[in-house]
Image 1 (tube, one colour):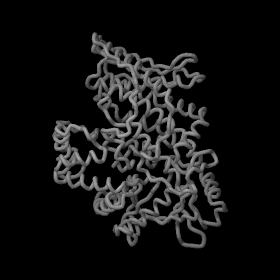
Image 2 (spheres, helix red, strand yellow):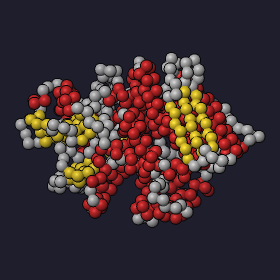
Image 3 (spheres, helix red, strand yellow):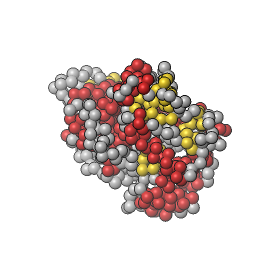
Image 4 (cartoon, one colour):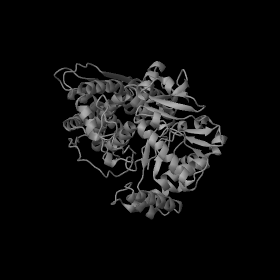
Length: 564
């Protein structure tokens, strides 16, 4: 399973919950090869299609006068590329894509090919967008998630003061969406205004110079993406934080830039935080705490933390306060991302049918997890449950802070204060001494108790100052996942078969875990497994594995990309 989402399905090659395929026109031309995908041009076509689809989605919201909402121009070598998204009252939205030679180096054939790709993308994207807009958008189902949500009958089915469910509920989320059409349309417009120019720039680099041109500008694009996420707010900052620890998904330049989002979130005013604390406690601050820090000791996309001392004691605690208005903002953003995922999936199905990743399922799993992270009551229960399980399993040198449930609510979490240093701030030699402890801790969670921390980035792991309690402290239990015993057994089998290089048996394990379809071609899969996984079995860590793969596939080490 992917420990960031807890889902073994989101990244798989087989979609066990496949939806009916979108019926889009198949744009081909026997007379001209310009519209046929081949090599790097396929990537460019997909980018153009995304741009077109995003702009066309404006048509779903009549009455909005939007003119030139997204413009971007990219110049690379001999080509100037410009795309403009637009919508005029009474007319369908669209995208204008123009490519012209800056000098005479660009051939007429290349110019025709660019124009042909753009025309094909726009036509197909319009059909996809219309098909998506005709379907009722449904919130993710809980029966397809591995995320742990609260099972308290007193909270299930209940809503807060703005109509949002206390515990994730598909039907109640959809009811909230139905009452927020104007706000959802506004948020969609804001999303398009930020994302369209960026995607246009990406497409421009791909068209003008392919992957090499894209890599040449990777630092610039990463910075642009990070700034856009900051402008769009907490949901997108959280998404950026999630991606910042995924070297298997993004190149190093993007990881470095998105890592800024881990600690660079601007805090909200302390006066506002104190008001939230008193409102959630239902009593004056002084009735519970003798002192509290004047400024937050940490600020994140969803909440910020203060250090305080419980009244009449020497016990210091961490007070996690939710940002005001976060549930409403996140709920609207999840609608926007869900809609965008539907369009993107339709385009992938049309332009790259060999790509079987279910992006809607991936977004759904992330959305359920993200909404659940807003429930601090659930987080407190997760924290105490894992504390008890690890104690029962006798896991050494790992400490989980105590939660003061009597002072905690859905928007407020009060837990034991722990002094320590984030692993991200420790020297490599210090981290090396803790690797075995961390391995034991997380393998126990995943392969023994089936209940595991799904957000173990370095900021959530502390090297403890007081080693009498433990050497590593785990923090932030808002995102936890569970695994059934049959899946645990299959994962254990897969590890054994991998270690023994028994790839035919590993195929069986992957089929059982829904990572591979039952009808996969074993004659092709087994040799590929041997080639891809044997370097991993040799050991030596991720860097060594990357070196082996680059050597195997003849990839030059530019120091800028990631293998995965």
